[in-house]
Image (cartoon, rainbow, N blue to C red; front, top):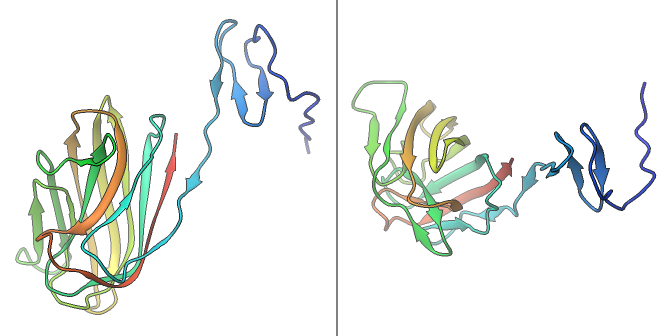
Length: 195
């Protein structure tokens, strides 16, 4: 077994290729002239999805390459499906340009498509979804998403995916409803992001 021993918390003046340095955060070097911060997995603070029409996670750093949205028993007051939208800037959410679908594995009638966000199919009030949606940067400001999970209330599995090209760097994620008016009435939502 190997043991890593940190002997200094000061970054060296000229980094050597392959160095691992620590100064409150870890840095790695791949050349003699540059260093890059080694990013970690960050979990945000969980939010109770028991009221309101949307839940926002803001302040996502520019270095993020993947976001996982986690749902535990999330349900709403009506029949509108869940919808995840990506944000740029401080309060601007992209509400068009998505090519996305959410379904459960029954029939073609049990699906929802959207150009306003990444949908997760639900079709009844109190329908409680548990699962995850992974949103990954493929290039530039273009993101792809896929989700899977289960609806304990209706006894079916959910899945789906999609893509969107944002107009600027992603900084936020919003969880809402397709119709924008149904309110949340149960469950918990959180995100994990990583570089």
